Length: 336
Image (cartoon, rainbow, N blue to C red):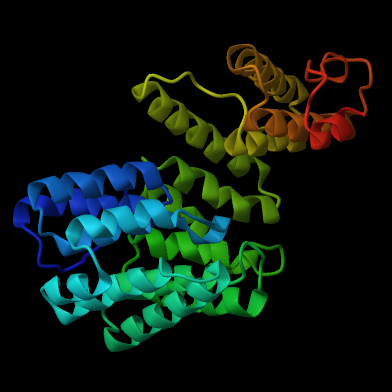
């Protein structure tokens, strides 16, 4: 998952799970990160940063997602109120991290709280310039300020911070990851090429790390790399699903990018096989759940790309709409 140094006052026995949680957090493997932080809490119930870490898994800045209820439940297990948490924190630095989390999950509009949180992380990063976790999480907070949109000047600022962190620790997964997000557009993608080449090997067990590199590869037209890395991402994702007793998926973000890579390589049979696997998944989920799931949107997107690229209006994908009359409007529009 990479490597980092994050000094804290937790028990030595809880450090492995805590560091693993932070590494997973940097690669947006949020569910596994939360599990790791909870294991650290079980080993050391007074481990302040383990509760902070779990709370941070419930906000996804780049995706504009936040679950304040779950986050506050995690923080409350350490101490019931922000004041009690601040008083209980063993060091000033850990107190600053907890304070920033309490600001993030306070009362108010999400955009306002995200801005106040980023301000707190900026203060923390300025106060502890050698703390690469403060630097990288500050960069991530900047990426979350535009609420899912792309504000180029702010993204460039985040990229500069992340690049500085890469120079200090080339194996830091968050530094490489946030460089890629910061320069994820055709104009700036060249600046993230070294990070894109490095991030997959840095975190070979993180599905998102494998996929994320392709955001830069796609912008540079490197289709062989797009396919290779998304194949790895899909395999890791399927392995994680199987470990939880769930079937592998043919729909979803990684498969959408993989199919597009196949198309750009001219591998239309492989693209169609993946597409029709997604169709089968949608139909299976429809039969078992009695309603459409997010897979339907994935299939609609993949199918529209395939039809637009191949212009094959009589093949299997063309005659394979989602078989339900009550499909959401966006699906109906695509089918039309």
